[in-house]
Length: 329
Image 1 (spheres, rainbow, N blue to C red):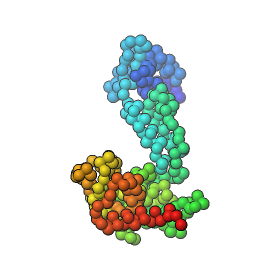
Image 2: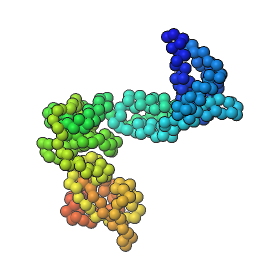
Image 3: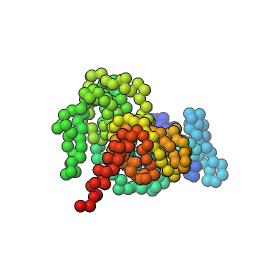
């Protein structure tokens, strides 16, 4: 590259230096900038550096000149502050649907958005755990196909897999393709799900994105619009346990006051609650299913289904079935 071409890159190199090598605790002096530019065969004088810094400041960069020793410039604010980047790193690390390989790639990209010093600090604070991660590297392609189908208002098709006792995956429905109208993506119970409409059964269903194989878009227009016109994703996630479908019912629960925090954490602060004779009366809407009963079990005798009676009876039957498994001969 000719010297004149290098000279044209001067501002970009200074911008890069400020982004990568400075923060509130690390400054770069005018002379250091001149020395760094010389490595790229770019000549600079102190006066021209002052002018460049001024131009970058007018461009929008928050560049501060520290006058006390050591004197120099540093980038005072960025698109993402360090606590925000740490939050994103934690989210990536704890996401089961992101593979181990992609986790490391994403964390490296996030680190590059901080100074090299903060990036190194973040790297030292990254705790590599034995957390279960998805092994499906194509999940990002799957998400892209889903977004394309939603954007183009068309159905998509894919094969769906499940685990076997031999710890191998196999196609469900003997490899028959699923034809679904995708309407939304949601993250629940540490997994990514596509919410769609199954025209064959006329039902809203959800599918684990990492279990979708060979997805592709079609030219067929989506069905189920009427089911999603007023669809509340937050409400759907709150009502659904373990992303298992069930019959939507409104329940009256009676629980001990000391577990009301658990109830609010699960159903939200808008949950109807009243205190009556040292008991909390709670009204919630859920998709009644075995995972919901399993969640109730974790609360033991501190919660009771008051009504409807048929749901209480079904829960009693569920508990008897479990107890029967442990009955001594």
